[in-house]
Image (spheres, rainbow, N blue to C red):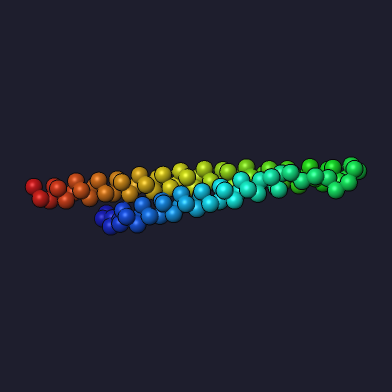
Length: 99
């Protein structure tokens, strides 16, 4: 099986993933106070329970977003490793053809 992979394109994709992850991380961090800092609308039990439910939903979102960001980071790292591997393999293959 022959693979024709452009290592520069894979590396650019990794850089894009890293950039998007940083942007999403900053947005999630900026929104986390609003997502998890909901105060009760009144002094009654229903307001307190509703605020607690909103805070729990916000915390769940932040946790899921953090997991997603970690996965994107690992994906970007894998892409960088793949780009470096393809580059090294191409260099070795070209050197073998010259000999």
